Amino acid sequence: MMKFERNYRICGVIECLTGLHIGGIAEELKIGGTDSPVIMDGVLNLPYIPGSSLKGKMRSLLEVRHSDKWLMNGGDVHTCKEPSCDLCVTFGRSAAEKIEGGPTRIIVRDSYPDQKTRALWDSTEDILHGTEVKGENFLNRITSMATPRFIERVPAGSSFDLEIIFSQYGVDDGRRLKLVLEAMTLLEDNYLGASGSRGYGKIRFTDLALMEKTVEDYRSGADWRPHEKTNGATTAREILGLLSAE
Picture 1 (cartoon, rainbow, N blue to C red):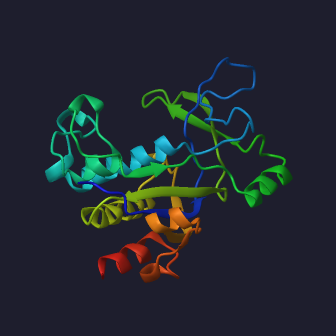
Picture 2: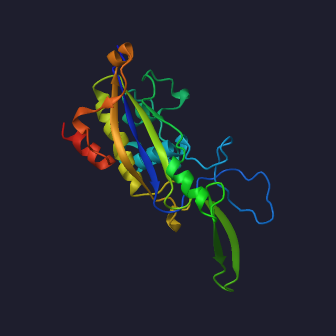
Picture 3: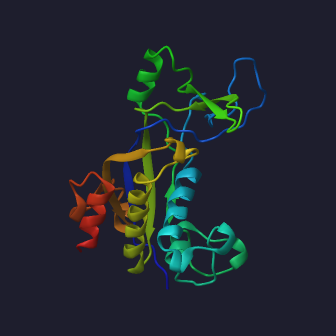
């Protein structure tokens, strides 16, 4: 019988090492506007990183990394009927599969700019609502005629608060927690958002901490506390290395 044991919390910062573009919807094209806007929070009118974008990228990198098990023909998202599939149990599977695998283990929160980043944006004249505009040209290979376009992106040096919750229901979930951290290390050597092959979207996870709260803590009202074996580790690689050494 499946029984909830504890929650883990991975918290820290997502630092943009290059400009970041996660696309929004252009409701209207204005004179002087951009061809490709970033996604904005409707209340703050500032860019943010959707949890779905971060979770989806982590999942896709794991599918490629473990292509012998999880890479689907045609590029579809992996989903299967195997109850113990680590990828599906961790990140979720299609409801159409109708498999009794318990709840999805991971929750990835939307990430919002931290206070230091908001202050940086406010103090820089070239940054409006947390974004810069980068001009690009497509060149005709024969005539060399340039076709310009203007891309909105979050500037390098911006930081966003990170929170990931991982729920443990059994001994196999220890292996799946390490899978999440593996995905984070893969992402640091890849890119988030669009146009990664043109230099966009290089990110780094910094000031990380792995916290935990047991079922007893929830009963008593105790707060999050550092995971004993990874206390002091501040990067995904360090935390993964300590967990793998258990």
